[in-house]
Length: 258
Ligand code: PEP
Image 1 (spheres, rainbow, N blue to C red):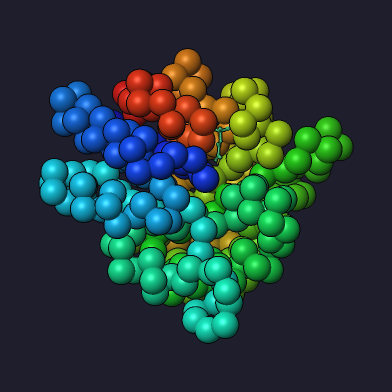
Image 2: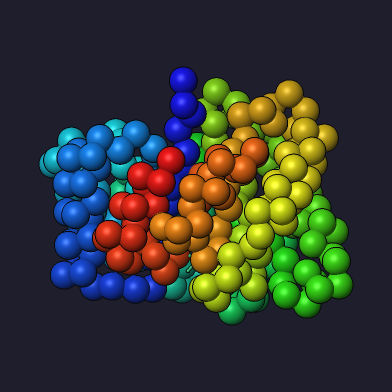
């Protein structure tokens, strides 16, 4: 049987009620019409979680199309102005969280320790947790990719190894080279193969027999043309899509690429 791929739409800080309504309605309609069997995940800006959840529920699509948050607070509750805790997210029936996105790491200066705290909050709340890792262009050029990713992974799980739950398939690692995000230049199949194999080997060492349940997905300038070859690469269990997920036709083509 063909294994399902995870196709995640990261809408970042884009859209408004009108645009996101149109996108969600279109995805629900096309998913049914085309009988898309891959797992679709929507990561909208947080204020729109509730209305999107209601749309998914009303159309009975909430079993096929999942909902997640783009970011969570590293703290449980308290005096952290502007932050959204995992318990608040629980009220919006999100099944997934995204942590350690390169925009959080580089624009908002979140380091590996903060990301480890977020991973802990997310796994403790039994969320499927997407942990983003990836090197900058400078690191890539200096051939430091594996070193950087090894450190990102090791620290991310430093507080949470015992929370990896194989039967819940609660860990997804997203390899997103910083230089490929939003640049229109995705990593080569060769680089994706090498890094995903490396992540798989590292996770085998860190999590032993629990590691088989871990998915590894790729993100960085994924588009309808390159998705098929990326998803056919061994150890690639899905894609995380930014820019192209804001265009209904492109996103649906990506969902149907394999
Ligand atoms: C992302 O933000 O996770 C991403 C992969 O963006 P893009 O597809 O636009 O490169």
